[in-house]
Image (cartoon, rainbow, N blue to C red; front, side):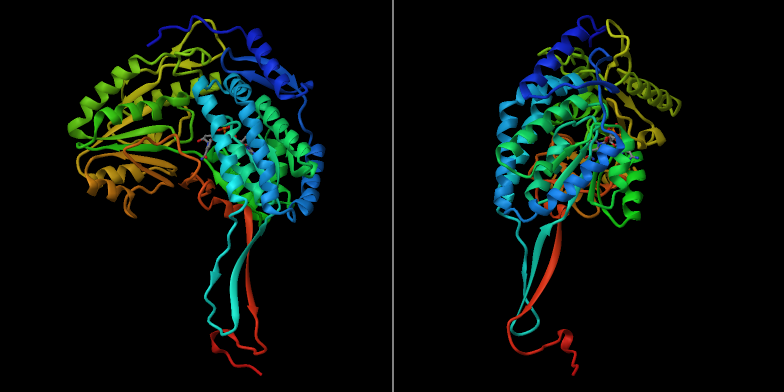
Length: 510
Ligand code: NAD
């Protein structure tokens, strides 16, 4: 493992790079003092920007509500054409957006490119969906009646997104919402304004080229106070909020208080069970990617490893050997696999979690140190493997950093019980060649998560499936499958095509 960070790009060069990328996308950079674009690569500020005021947010919501009146009656395949054009622009600017993501979040280049790829993929999915917003026809109990469901656009969708997927989370929501006939108001993370400006600009271009209503999409560059305005506004029919469980605890009840709808995508505390029959070559590579990718800052990051007692030493030794070779450093360097954490504070939270684990009797097998060097305000950390004597409170919390807690089990029921004994329920996986174990893991009394995988890690979901989790992860589903239904309202229609009145349940009246 790298002892020290020795070569990092200068903040000035990152500033120039960001400016060049924004120019290529066509973002006019309006400098101000309200909000600061920053890079975790050096820990420094890049630009001061103007933020959206509460009054501007109010006007943006009003404009999106007005645009909805036109957009909802635009044929869905025509709405799909807008998203198709957005996908084309994303393809054209994949490099530009990936650079901005790396600069603002610190993701390594291939993961940043992958995030933009995910946006392109969801656009493709949404374009197909724009011709498949099917309702059901239901067998009526009455003669001469037709019973059916129709799906209508819902209204303004407020998207609140987290820093760690600054562009993809928006696209999962926006691409689907737009083909469903909704308009979108987006409040991105205050930590990633540049990426949001670039993505918003591309959609504005597509809107202008296709002559769609200008306000089908509005971007609010601001902190949570403007987010709260979106949450409380009765014109926002659905609030889709991605972020910490703390945030969801505030947002969920506020939206419910005004009988709005919310779609919550909150924190995870994901686990993998490794059984004695597992293919360990496959398991080790998957575990390392799931635990260390994005420097442990994915909602689906692997945080708990539940290993059968008989193979625990071998698994931990092999993981430690793999961790020893992980290149940590500048995310723009081709060889780097682990970039910085988002902030020094995140590094501090990792240190505190490790101290709590040690107080609970943990053995830190490897990692946990913050690397020093040319970036005092950045947080480059060694990913940690920690053997725990029990699943204590610190293990049951989500620490947004690369800490992999290892627990052992003897009986399979014990593994499942440990697995489910956390407040979150996002992603899970099992490595086994035993079909009974695999099926049990996926069954009703197996994993209690929204995502349950076999012989693959917890992170890196495909857009085709519905994404989301249970318990304190919030219960929302977005992206593929039939997640689109959350962005529409359902009407049940009964049509009597006879001249007779037949009441349901054989009721006689008059
Ligand atoms: P965060 O909760 O600090 O912020 C997320 C967003 O919510 C930001 O835009 C923020 O301004 C806004 N916000 C915060 N409080 C608000 C309030 N009271 N009202 C309205 N808006 C408010 O999260 P973060 O640090 O940016 O992201 C990391 C967290 O997000 C982790 O917990 C991670 O697991 C989670 N996450 C979940 C998913 C998922 O799909 N389940 C995906 C990505 C990230």
